[in-house]
Length: 594
Figure 1 (cartoon, one colour):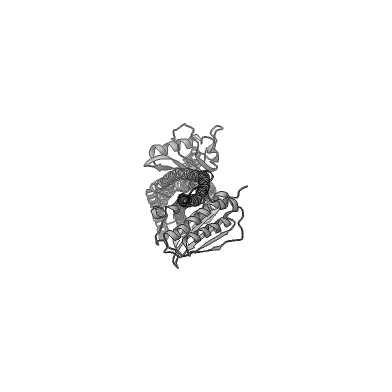
Figure 2 (cartoon, one colour; figure 1 turned 45 degrees about the vertical axis):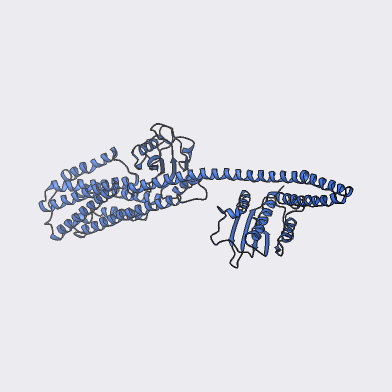
């Protein structure tokens, strides 16, 4: 084979030097990216660009010396560059390790370059296999990025795939154009354009990873905010993780994780949903145990795609296991799995640890909230029981006073009347005074029994009982006037609701007279699909602007009303009216008796 070459033009040599500088710059950029993010694909890219730069050194040396050895190494390094870029793409896409088949492919440029340079005399047949290998390897690199784009929707990966695919097509012109000097020196500049396009694509991929990582943090952190229900936090967290790019499953582990031990997840979604009922794959268990042992996130490949572990649980291709930290210790792990790179690729460890701390704090708060909700429910049940027992006791005392004490006093009063008629006039006058005292006592007992248990409420219903209460109060308080704004009738509420509303009106009117010096009041009652609304307005002195029912000894009766109403699931609000006086507003939900 004739190895002689024409005298190298200065412009071609300058273009080669320029491309070498650009290539070393790309290698340095990827090395700096690795130093910043510690991700293996940056090492692979830095290695690929370094091999490419060595290739440029070989061709420059050949231009200066025209030694066939430099042409041989230029051909070898050209093939190795294509393989290195393919390997970098596979590391980025699947975090693939170097395998024997890659070693076998790496032998081809070495063997064929020797044959082409030292054994063949026909340039075309010497160049075609090498060019075909170069183009196919470059096209495979484009295919890897295209597959990643289809799996994740990455725009940057699509950019890289298109640029590399065009580069693969450009390689095909070498035997026909570039080797014959048609492209010189513009072929070098075209290669530089492809290199820069790939370098820009790498930077775009980094920005995409950062954006996706921060989006993942924001998405998961959004589920850690205070919630109406604390018991659905784990499931909501799992469902939110499934919305992240390329994530196919998520699981939360909160038990001691030991290698080889079967520990089911406390919550899981997607492809990990079955981990709640059964143990995760062995590789996943090992990663979880390492998270607990080191306290550091474990992010990377979990196994070969689709591996089933001899009939056992299917291994995910990738997983990211974040430590869940509670009280400064690792209490479990949050795991996301997928078929493409994890959503936390570009994030520093400290970000992932901070997220784990957030998750741990949120879960701990959720546990405390569940306990608080259980304690609150128990207190509400006890309060309801206390109100019922209290009312039962009032009813019992009222019945005893009415049926026994009042009847006995009535009989005594009757007997005293008979004695007064039969005795002398001096004794009759004294007995009449005693009878008057006994009659007053009977009236007082009847008033007490009416307050203890309003008979009108049991006999007539809520609206007539309220009107009777208003008449009695107006009669005892003098000139106080009470107006009503009520519907003609109410749907049949439960006895507990009627009693709670009656007691609320009774206490509000009593406070209006006793504390506010009110001369008029208005009772409003209305209902809707949700419940009954009661308002009692008066024109008295009013409560202070910062009035609270809690801790107010002068209005302990209102505290009792609030307990009674809240036991029914209702609300009580007491406030000063803008025009003066006090408003007591009560709402209770419907509880219709069957």
